[in-house]
Image 1 (cartoon, rainbow, N blue to C red):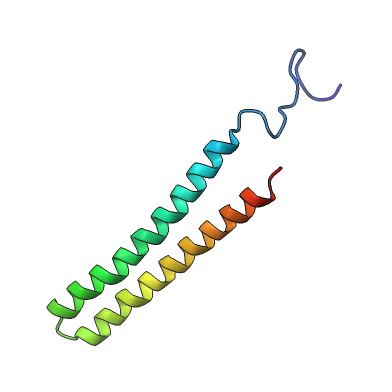
Image 2 (image 1 turned 120 degrees about the vertical axis):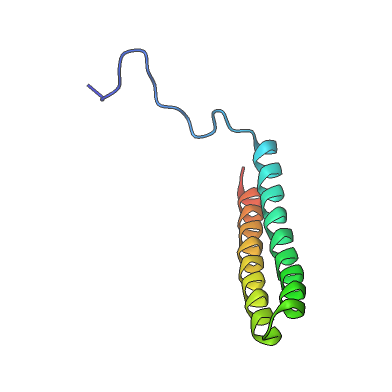
Length: 88
């Protein structure tokens, strides 16, 4: 016995996957991540630097957070684009 029930077969890797849908959601997710992290970096920094008792210290934390999130978003976008271009 091969370990599968009668009438069942292994699912192929490409079944149920739309290349167009995968491209759309990959690019959309990467762009949304990069945009949201850029907005966090800019607007949180503006708010923190105006309302904080120690504006430079608090604004640098927001800048660091935004930079890290933007790098992650860019990495995800790059990974998605590499996966799209190398797909057959």
